Length: 102
Image (cartoon, rainbow, N blue to C red; front, side):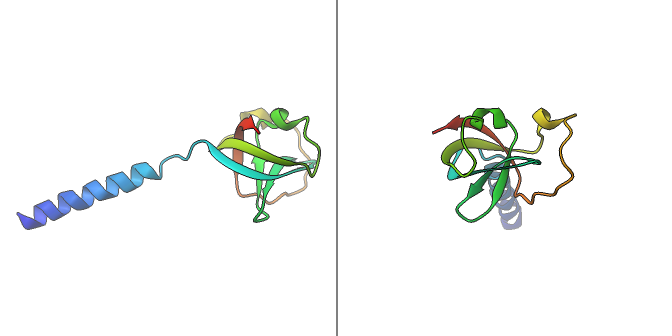
């Protein structure tokens, strides 16, 4: 009986942990706009770049300008599908979709 309760408790804790890590929404981060032929990026204070999929929302911001963005992480970037980019590599920590510019 005790082993069964322990197993159920472990399964419950595992499920809660898994659900809490599933998706992170509405992140706020301040950084600098960085552009090159590969795309537009948000460079954070820890020198990590994040590719902005919907770069049109920060089009009015200048290279090197500080911005605060609310965004979601994304695994796909439909805005870039079928577009020809340069062959340069720009290391980044992932892709983001901006929801709001502050």
